[in-house]
Length: 100
Image (cartoon, rainbow, N blue to C red; front, side, top):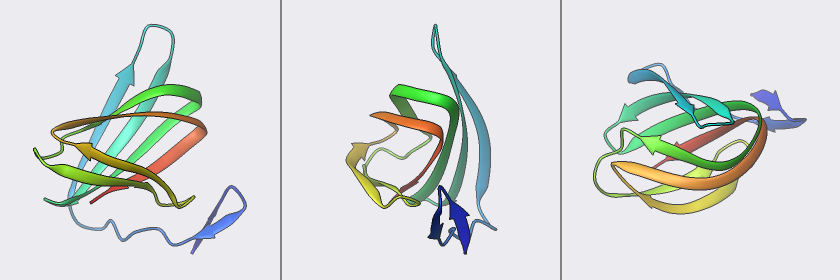
C-alpha cells in the first residue's frame, strides 16, 4: 500500500511487461510520461509535470477501445480509441492512468 496525495492506494503489480519512456512536448509546456504495457489489453501511463492543463496522448495502444482510469484518485476518463488516444486533463505533479 502506498500513499499519494494523502490517500492510500494499492499500486498495480508491474513486474512483467514492456516498459517505454516517452517525452511529450508542446511549444510552451513539457510533460514527461512513462508507459508500462502489461498485456495486449492493459497498459499503465504515468505523466509528470509541475502543472499540466491540456491534452495528453496515450501512445502505443492497439486499434480498439480502451477504458481509461486514474487508478490513484479513482477518476474515470471514459473510453479512448487506439492506437493513439487523446485526453484533455489537468493535474499537478503527476497522474497515473490505467487503460483496459
